[in-house]
Image (cartoon, rainbow, N blue to C red; front, side, top):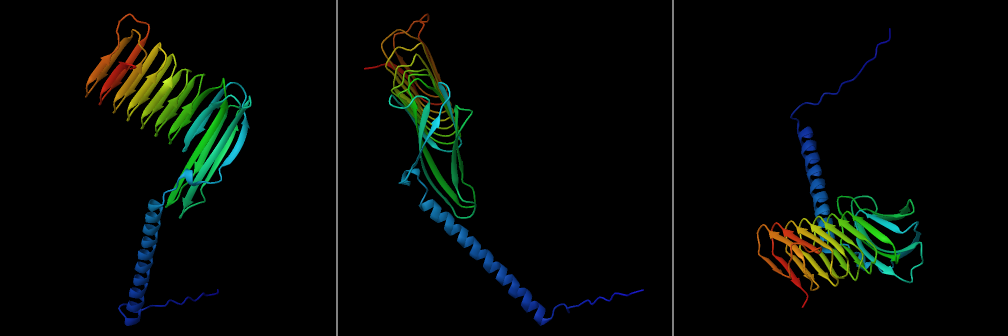
Length: 282
């Protein structure tokens, strides 16, 4: 039988050499922790002082995507969006310009992607994660006239101009701005104001959980449905007779338009906390 011998080294507890090494290791560990903390705090302070802005991108990228049909869905997770209609845009084509700035000090490289899925869904994604990460993206989307658009944005403001077809905008966190449009509007924000001016839509729906609602219509609508969880609501209408319902949980209500409970032109304005104003254009 073969015997295996093992040697066990026993260090006397409390010896001067052991104590010195232990204290030295502890001091080294603490020094490294302090240095790492200082580095992280410095990076955070630097990122806060110099926040990323897509507007600083001096060389934006451009790309055209084929569009099948007359409807477009824009699916974005984190970007400001500007949508415009162009009579000169090529039929069956969507033109996109992208601005991007990103800084990640402790983490993977930031990046953005774009793709047209199923021929009618423009998917925009941004990856920006790490201990110290600061990124900003903006997309300008040009669509040909006659295309109905639906926007789904996770985080970012959305603006749209010149639409004659139906336009639906939903953003979880950001302001919504619409101008010079006549198609039906369905505008929603989880946290941000909504403003639609110079619109001739027959149907306008505007809802925000936190923010003001401002609507200025140039044509007599069949339906205006507006609500804010926390913010004022202002509606300016052409002179006509309207069936109006308005109410505020905590705020004044002023309705200054001709009213008739049997009118086919319905206007609804409600807020949980804020002022309500419904009036005719001056």
